[in-house]
Amino acid sequence: MNKPLIGAFLAALLLGAGVAPAVAAENVPSQEAAPTAKAVTFAGTVALSNCSGSVVRSPDSAPTDPALVLSNGHCLETGFPGPGEVLVDRPSTRTFTLLNASGSGVGTLKASKIAYGTMTDTDLSLYELTSTYEQIESSYGIRALELETAHPVAGTAITVASGYWKRTYSCDIDGFAHQLKEGRWTWKDSVRYTPECRTIGGTSGSPVIDDATGKVVAVNNTGNESGEECTDNNPCEVDENGEVTVREGINYAQQTYNMVPCIGVGNKIDLDREGCGLPKP
Image (cartoon, rainbow, N blue to C red; front, side, top):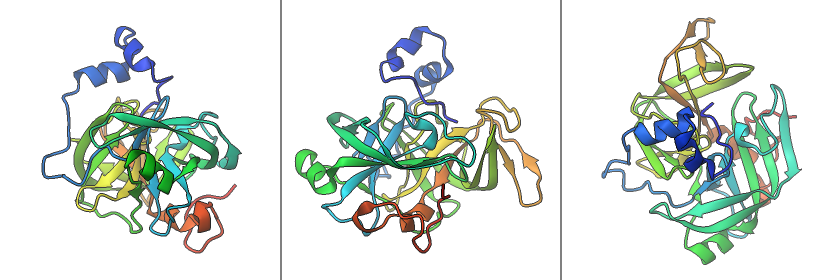
């Protein structure tokens, strides 16, 4: 995983601690979105205590619906869900710092529950907030990011927008991994980035945004750090024939189009809805 960080204050403390994510944050050249990618800003992204995320909506979400925050399953405050574990409707009081277009924090949003979370087949979490989309827009002038409903396409120009680091990473979708194995977990049909997206710890949960449409097509979650095979922080790809490929330095995300049908009336997660592709408890 693009390791979650232990508390927002750690970003400063790690500079003297020799921990890889913070060192990388200092030494990796800035990868701000290209000037042509005008649709992509930080507006709607959030910073968690240990990860990144974004306020998202489905095409059918209503302004009066409680807003949803998208991040990774491995960013949950309850710890990493085990293989096969799915969390639904768990109470939560977690808070999120909402960012504006320039990356400045403009307010604090609060969760009422973990609507959904898992690390099985995918690596995502959805928090239901105490605020509606309408209230967020009225208070902060910020609209939620819309979730794409179709499978992304190789070659698409994308931006990974990290609310934790207030940094963007621009590259293309290189292709898709049939299975991505990391330690105890296996993810399906993962998005593989081209090498330019050198995401680091703390970028976990960042929205992956289609530069052309401004819609969220995936959620950033991991990368192979040191060339090991299928170990923690070193995912490997497994194709339909079981052949394993290791791509050192390459990073990945989990698609989100298949969760859109799971979002029902009132933004409630309904895993029995037609087309819902998320694992059930």
